Structures are given as C-alpha cells and as structure tokens.
Length: 497
Image 1 (cartoon, rainbow, N blue to C red):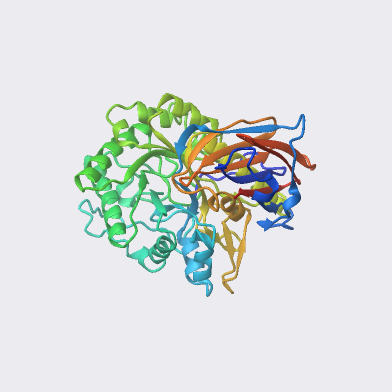
Image 2 (cartoon, rainbow, N blue to C red; image 1 turned 60 degrees about the vertical axis):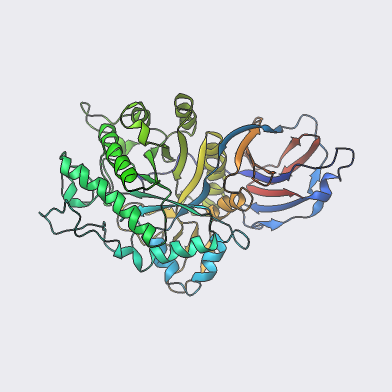
C-alpha cells in the first residue's frame, strides 16, 4: 500500500453516466429515435440501484441552457491499457479459501459474464497487505548476503497468488499484469530491514537487484503469468512507511537502477516495460525530509531528463494520495512520447462509515475514471481486489482500506463495494486498446470519452456538484442529441445499439 492518509477531500456525492455509443451507419434522417436504441443501467449512492437496467423513457430532447457535452471521435489521444486492481497476498488468501472462489473470479474477470477487469498490479513480495509475515523472494538470515541469488524463490506465491493469476488470465486472455516491489531483500538495504532504509551504495547490490527483477519476470512467465510492465519501487519517496515494507529510493538511484534493469531485461530477451516513479501526483507529508535533504517534487521529471536512464523508461506511474491528476498532463506535455499509467488508489472508510459507498463512488469516478484518464492515464488501477470486513488482513500500513469486494473469511460470502461499480461502469464498456477521444467539459459536468476497437464510443460523465439535487445535461454525437437527468449520487451506463 502507500503512504496512506485520507484521500483528498471525499465528502459529497457523485452523479455520473457512462454511454456506449455506436456510430450510426444510416443517415440522420433514417436513424431510429434515440430512445429505441439506448439501454440504461444505474447505480445510486443509496444502493437502491446497482447496475440496474432502467426503463426506455429516461432520455429526453435536448434542454436549452443545460450543460452540454460534445463528443468528437476525430480527436484521438492515448490508447487504454486497462482497468483493475491488485491480487495482494491478503486478497489471494480471502479469494482462494472461499468456497465461492470460481464464482468470484468469473464475476471479476470474465468479460462476458462479469466485470472483465483487464489490468492488475501485483506486489513483488510483500506489501502491507499480507496474511502473515513480510517477505521477499530472497530472504536470508541477518548478516548474510546473496549476491548471486542462490536462495531466490517465488514459492510463496505458488500456493494462492499464481493460481489466481492464471485463473484470471484464463477467464480474460487479454488481461495484462504489471509488478512492483515494496522493498528489495533486507540484505540489500542500509538498515537490514524490509521496513524503511535505503539501498546499499554498492555496485554488487545494484547488480543483484537488477538480476532479482529479471529472475522474477522469468519465473512468473514460466509459471504462466507474463509481466507487461515493472516499476522499480513502490512510492520511492515514502521515507516513513508505517510498519510495512518500503524504501527511500532517490531519483538518481532509481535512474541508475533503471539502466541496469533495462539492460538486463534486454539481454534476457524480455520485452517487459519499465515505468518510473510510481508515487503520488504531488509530495505527500510522509515524503518529507530534513532541510538539507528534502524530497524531490519533480522526481518523475528528473527521471525522464536523465539522458542515460530515460531511454529505459516507457513511462511514469502515479498514485492518488496527494495532489491533482493535472500533474500527469504537465509531465505529458514535457515528454509526449512517454506513457502515463495510473497505478494505485485505495477505497477507504469515510469519517462517517455510512457515506463510504457514495463518497468513493463520487471521488474515484471524478478523479480516477475521468480525471486520471483525461490527463493521459492508460490505466486505472485501484488497490486490493478483496479485503475482509475489517479491512484486512494486513501487517502494518492502512487500517481503513476497502477492497473492490469484501469477503467474509468465515463464510466466503462476497459483497461488492463502491469500487466494484466504479470499475464495472468502465470495464463492461471500455475495451482494452480503446482510444480516448475528444469530449467537452461544461461546468460541474466532467467527462471522458473513448472509441473501442469495434467502433463503438463510450462516454463517462460525472456531475461534480456536491449538492443533493438532480442534474440535467445534454449529449451530442454528430447528429444525435439528447438530455439526461441524474439523481444525486448516481452513476449510469447507457449503451447505443
């Protein structure tokens, strides 16, 4: 997990809509009335509707003076890699031991009968979300070293994590997986601990860590789980992880490591991408340091400005726990050939637990599904795929986190959370390799649009008014236009046939 504090302001509700719009083959005069071709599904903050199909008469004629969205398929931006979460050690334990395991996995990953989650971010070793002790793939007794990685083993993952990843890939063959370490083995670090510390400044350590990444990618591939991308350190400027694995990795050190890892991956014939940074949009309070050794607010930029390292970075990864997604666009404008990925944001319990569902529905739709993607993100990845009702199991770190689903460890029964619907309202309609296209934003109506490989168009709209009323807005795509009114706290999916 991350340097976890409350996600930036999450009070209030969301009003959202997703439309999958097929470009009509006929002329406007021959086109059927809009209402005969649109199907509507609704999720509301009070849970009265949870992706529930609505009557056909919910659309109306355009309303004068209402906010309006113009969708422009001719404007093309980034190609999407996918949407998803993480099968952490904790998630794997809950799902693997549930008697409903197969049904859970189908519901989450099957693109025809379920959500069709399409991108996962997997910890390399332990995060704070483990069902037991912290671990890496090369743990040796204190005081020993293992530069040649004689003790390297992914056996910990063979019991539950790898079987679930293989099952997910079987259900959705288009699924992609990236991987991230929370800490290298303790023997590589200055404090000889997985929690905190820095990488030992020794060429043998850097070389061994480079081999560690390559061995991980190779052995996961041999186990049936190819790795699409790596980041080199989760939240490298989190200098004070709260009782869970983490490491202070300076930008100059990550640049040095990227050159080593990049060369070793190439030498091994591996096409796995390397993404830099993997931290928040802006500096977080836990990123602080002494006045003579502050955290770098331009860490991501410095990686891409490094002439030796930049060639090995395919892009930059971001988290949500501090700042604003517009930082992604600022980086993209400076380095337009580098990709942007959004790789972590956990659902959390609100100050008032009764508002957790609508708060998350609002915030994650506004700032992730819409905000991060409008600012060039190719992926939207939350955090734990599954947690228990108490937000665990975990070892240190976050004690208010919420998974995509909640699994009761006693019965194995599953309850979807708000993130299940946030992700589902995208994954059921936005296909991998969809391209973000042009769409205007008007007032409190925020949106993002996509064109799928089959030519259909998807529009995700969020009403960012934090009031309690209903919002009416217009949508125009070519000669097609209509209005729609959304109840407070709602997310809606519309499909044009």
